[in-house]
Length: 231
Image 1 (cartoon, rainbow, N blue to C red):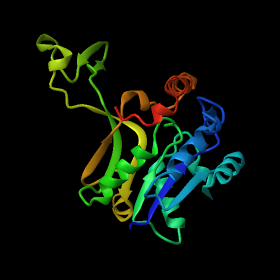
Image 2 (cartoon, rainbow, N blue to C red):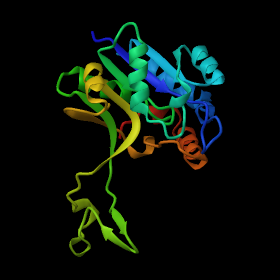
Image 3 (cartoon, rainbow, N blue to C red):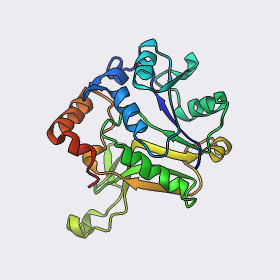
Image 4 (cartoon, rainbow, N blue to C red):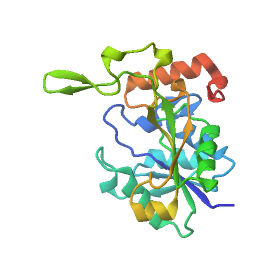
C-alpha cells in the first residue's frame, strides 16, 4: 500500500474572515472538520497541518493531526501553496508516494470525496487528480467596455438540456498527486490528470462570511445526509 500523506495548510491570518480556519462549523471548526474527514480516509497514513499560528496548532493537535510550523514568508495572502507543499515534503523523514492537499475552506467535502480522488492516482491511470463540479454557465469576458461570450454563440443558443457542455469548475476540495512527479514538475496538477466529481451544493469554497453562512445553512438543512450525497 502506498504511503499517503495529507497536508492541510492553515495559516492564522485572513482578510475575509478573521481567524477563518478556526471559524465555528458543525460541532467544531473549519479546521477540525477537515481533519476529521481526512482521518476517516481508508488511504491516508499521515495527516499534517502546516501552520504559522499557535491557536491553529493547538486545535490541530487536539483533533489528532501532526503539525509542522511554516516559515513566515509562506504565510501571507499572496503566498502560493505549491512551494509550501514542496517545503513540507522536504521536511519529512519518510517521503510519501502520494500527497493529498486539503483546504480547510471546503467544509462540505467528505472522506468519500477524498478517497475517490486518491483512488484515481493509486490506480496508476493518472499522475494527479482533483475534485471538480460540472458547470452549465454561459460565460462572458469583458473586453474594454464591452462583453464577449466565451463558451457559446448567442445566435445558436439551445435549450440548456441540449447544449453540448464540456465544462467543469475546480472546487478546491481535494487534490492528490504522485509526490516525485510533483517535485519534478513544481506543480500539484501535472501529467495525466483525473477528476472526481462533486455536486454543486457541496462545492462551496469559503472565502468570505457569505460563503461560510451558506455552507452552514446547507449543513443545517441536510444534516449528516449532506455529507454522504454525491449527486
